[in-house]
Image (cartoon, rainbow, N blue to C red; front, side, top):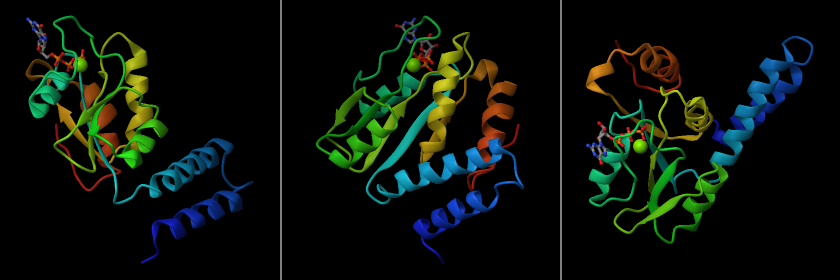
Length: 178
Ligand SMILES: Nc1nc2c(ncn2[C@@H]2O[C@H](COP(=O)(O)OP(=O)(O)OP(=O)(O)O)[C@@H](O)[C@H]2O)c(=O)[nH]1
Ligand SMILES: [Mg+2]
């Protein structure tokens, strides 16, 4: 099986050959994926990024705090609360820092108990602050695994199921149902 580098080279070639037979928007989307894959390939095997995602108030920041065993993420009864992604990442891991910085994540708390894995607390996907959802949608293509957190009050919310789970399950081995 070809390695990821060869596949990305082939994708670049396909994008170049597609001029005139596909729309500029489609070519740009494919070229963006190729560029992101090429960047991510530099870190394969040495850094895994896991995001905690979901609706506002579902308990994303609280879950990260529970996993960390200390209050590293700010929580609040006021919705929405988390405005920017925040990472709990291995201390002294320059590779991980570089990867997180390439994703635009500057808020990083040291994790001295795990290596190679960063856990991200993300903003919400369903509050009145549209920027939060935009931030999550921009980050998701660069994330290796996602922990989706559901609020029992809005467990059947179409935003979560239709806009995120169905859409992203197409790019992973997992499936979802509503
Ligand atoms: N009463 C009270 N409830 C809190 C407090 N902090 C968090 N909660 C509640 O705990 C639940 C989860 O809160 P968070 O962990 O901040 O939720 P979140 O998913 O990170 O929410 P966003 O950051 O808005 O996306 C919600 O029901 C909050 O109302 C607090 O200081 N007081
Ligand atoms: Mg939060």
